Amino acid sequence: MYAVVETSGRQYFVVENQVIETELQRGYNPGDEIVFDRVLMVRDSENVAIGRPYVEGARVVGKVLEHFKGPKLLIVKVRPRKNSRTKKGHRQWYSRIKIEKIEYGEGNA
Image 1 (spheres, helix red, strand yellow):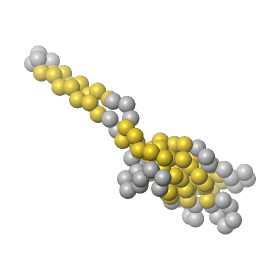
Image 2: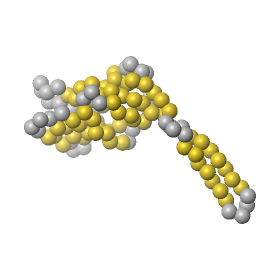
Image 3: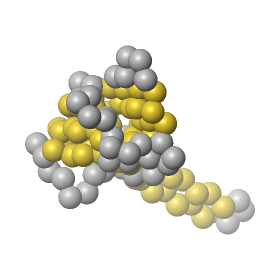
Image 4: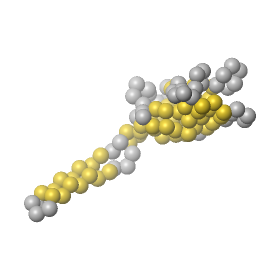
């Protein structure tokens, strides 16, 4: 069984027992349970449910493993003929989440 969920303005293809990295999930600490209720699609062994825009009664339950910073990105701005240069760095925060179960319909878990 797999699903496509939407969080932080992005879509993620998830399978049970998979670890995904998303944008920082604010309000959750490591060890907390997180529920994604904006499920766009669910597929089990025989059926496919596609939401308009979301699948009714579907949810994905996960556990926040950790928050971490991604690699450093350098932003360099150079203006020609002015000897003017700017160099900045940026590190984005991410959350690592383990997908525990995908729930859909009555009795399907």
